Image (cartoon, rainbow, N blue to C red; front, side, top):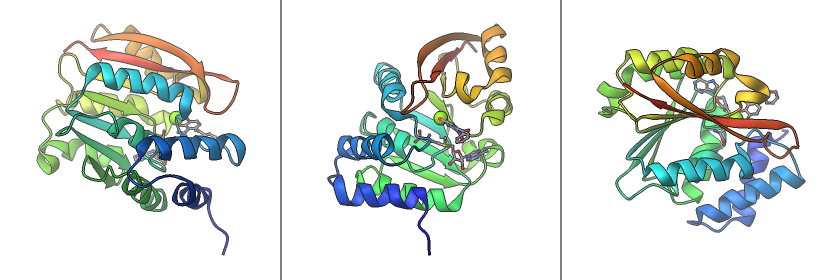
Length: 214
Ligand SMILES: C[S@@+](CC[C@H](N)C(=O)[O-])C[C@H]1O[C@@H](n2cnc3c(N)ncnc32)[C@H](O)[C@@H]1O
Ligand SMILES: O=C(c1ccccc1)c1ccc(O)c(O)c1[N+](=O)[O-]
Ligand SMILES: [Mg+2]
């Protein structure tokens, strides 16, 4: 039977990356996507911006919307302090299965809780199921038409506090116009655009960092 792109990406990690070494997992995936097959990971250029936001924030509780193969999960988790936790949501069971193996290969399984299911179903259950109070950082990277409804849902569920940071991928390509308009015009957010490129391409893309003001 034919392999899938995530399976081929996992194979590359298992053959080339060092177990327990997140940086080698990240480098292997970027090499694979640059030279073999494009894949929708945040990539190394936007990944460096993600790293700087995470390092500056030093978050205790992080939510990632959209795991795919776990590339950005590994980038974020590798920068978290010892008792910090990252919850990542993925509703495609095949992608989730591959991501679990890549996160484990990086040795980060103790910092990461991968929840298999849809953001709209799980965001309202975060407090009761996982004892989450509020998120210090949310990385939005799932289907682009879900960024705005899920942001409103997080507000309604009291999952954001004064200073919580939303970091959104792909605000230019493929684009998230309704989300951008919301965070840039709402008095409840301070928003900033970090210009970059669509992963592994020359097309413009960027990350929007929005601080919730309470
Ligand atoms: C662009 S990929 C994530 C890439 C990943 N953040 C990275 O940079 O390595 C988007 C993922 O979000 C998942 N997804 C889309 N909508 C979702 C939703 N509402 N709930 C959970 N997962 C979702 C898709 O199945 C897909 O795997
Ligand atoms: O939507 C796509 C897409 C559209 C068409 C073909 C392939 C991917 C995409 C492209 C780059 C991204 O960084 C990303 O997060 C996504 N995504 O699916 O969430
Ligand atoms: Mg993306």
